[in-house]
Length: 236
Ligand SMILES: C[S@@+](CC[C@H](N)C(=O)[O-])C[C@H]1O[C@@H](n2cnc3c(N)ncnc32)[C@H](O)[C@@H]1O
Image 1 (cartoon, rainbow, N blue to C red):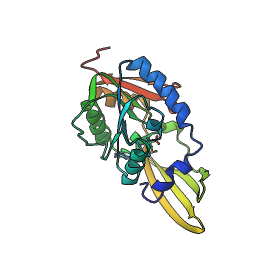
Image 2: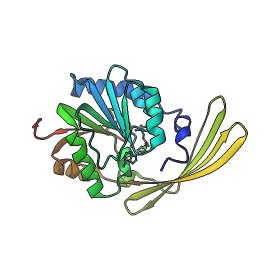
Image 3: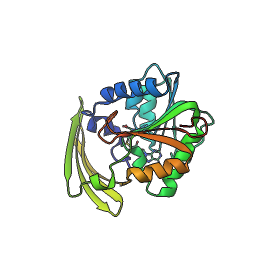
């Protein structure tokens, strides 16, 4: 998915306010898991949120090996592995699980989403909470748009055009990249597919996975945030 552009991810998202997001997350962690000390970042990407959480012991998983390597460089004290969020077993539990920037949307079937939620729950320590930033809801997704993002550092430049389309309940994003290192420029294209789900569907999935979830529309980002806890250890 990101193999053509992984090394440029932090440049493409250089204007995304990871520090501000992490400040909001920290407040939520203190509210929902005040005793929390350990975080598992599921689909951690380059580990940009974890970079701003030095007070926590951190772990992360991602499908993309280059991201796992970059995250490990940012948090050498952390534990990062290549794994699929649908089926992983790290053999340990965490106080706080996060799955941010709509990464969960890459799971394209109900079975995959449920399997992931069950896996998340299996890694949740008693009293812990799972924080999931969902993708767009079905009616909120706009097709036929092209967005541009650019970024640069001392020796690299990137320009990405991302187009939006849709097939049923699957959004289709095509990223066209121009990637320059010095005067060497290459072109790469990536196709991303993310599932569009409504809040009612999310609540059905959480229930089926034996989780109680609360939706916070504004607490984190415009996409909202689910905070889920185990139904068995935290009856509401
Ligand atoms: C939009 S990025 C978000 C990355 C990071 N959480 C952030 O906020 O920058 C989506 C991430 O999901 C990862 N991903 C997609 N499907 C995955 C899967 N089945 N298991 C693990 N990671 C996955 C991608 O490799 C990518 O790092």
